[in-house]
Image (cartoon, rainbow, N blue to C red):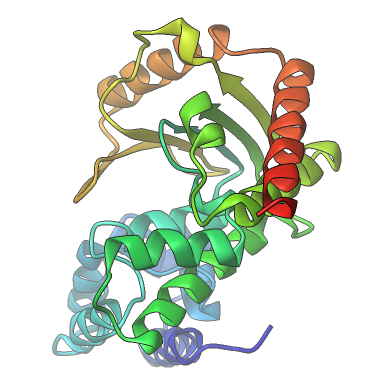
Length: 277
C-alpha cells in the first residue's frame, strides 16, 4: 500500500522528537516518566507508529523546552487528518489495541467495510462533496481496516444489529460483497461476528454505536458515536458501565455459527436480487 503524506509527516514528528530528546540527554524512559507515559510509548511516537495526545505534546514541549514546536506540529497534522476531529484519536488507539469489541446498530462498522460500501456511506453523508474528498475518506477507512490482517492484529469482536445486515447500503451487489467480506474474516478467524436479531427489541445500548478497546500497557477505553459526534471515554467507572452494556448485548445475540449462517444467507439473497435487476 502506498505511503500517505500524513504518515510521512508523523514520522518526521517522531524524528524531530528523537533528535530533541537526545539533545536533552534523556532516554525514552526518562522522557516518558516526565510526561507521564511509558518509555515504550515514546518509542512508538518516535517511529511514527503512535501519535501523542495534545496534552502529551504540550508536556514534551515543556520538558524539552522547545518553545511549543510539538504542540504546533500536532495541531497542524491533526487538522490535516482524514478523520473527523472527534474520531482521530480513536483511529490511533485502534492501531495499538490488543482487543476491540464493537457494536454496530445500523451500519456495518468501518473495520468491516469494503471500499464500495464505504463510498456509498460517505456519499450519502456528503452528497455535494468533491470526488477528491470522497476518495480521501474511503481510503482512510480502508487503510484502518488493515489492522485486522496484520501479524499483530487485535482480537476483534463485533455485534451487528440485524438492521445493519438487512439494509442494502450501496445496492444489492455492494451488500453481497460486503457480507461476503465479513463472512471471510469470520471464517479466517480474524473477526468474531455475531448478529443481534431485530426480534430482541429493546437492548442494552439504544443510543448509537459502541466500541471498547483494550491495550497492552494502558487502561481500557470506550467510544460511543451518534450521527454527528463521538465521545472517547476513559473514566474507569464509565468504561465499566460500557463493558457491562456490551456483555448484555452479547448474551442476546445469535451464536457465532447461527450468525455466520444468517450473514451468508443474506449475502446470497442480495446476490440473487442483483443478478435479476
